[in-house]
Image (cartoon, rainbow, N blue to C red; front, side, top):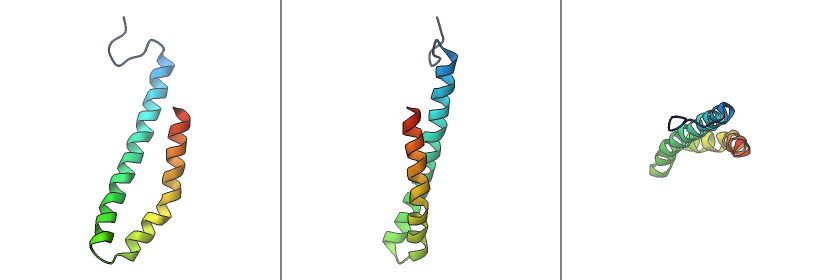
Length: 70
């Protein structure tokens, strides 16, 4: 019997770890964006808003790649 959290086929474990790594990176980016959004909402911070807009497409691409791995 395989230990909990480990799949019978090792390549599934590798694939799940790759997905987990990407999802964690996406979550980290989203948390940074939330911090900037709080500043943008609480006062005029056009640089922060422009940074979020500029980072939007790379974040969307990272999300698409993570979904394609699933």
